[in-house]
Length: 86
Image 1 (cartoon, helix red, strand yellow):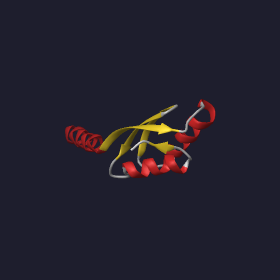
Image 2: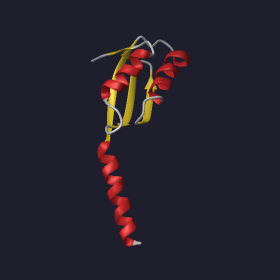
Image 3: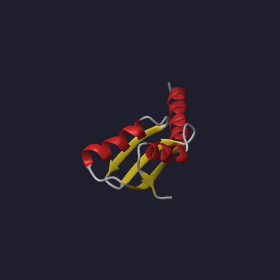
Image 4: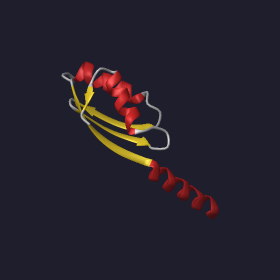
């Protein structure tokens, strides 16, 4: 049982080490109903994104760097029709 606990702790620390947070400034968003939902939906489709907080003009994203890149996240937002400040 002790070995299992150590293994779980190790796996958890490796997973946490790969998680990255990103705050993006987004232009072109004017409403909560359509724009925010559109960006949130686009981010939900990106593999590796585990958490997202979207509001008008900004998105905070937590993602697994082993599964996706910052450029993939930006591309998803831009594909949804919005501009990301770089």
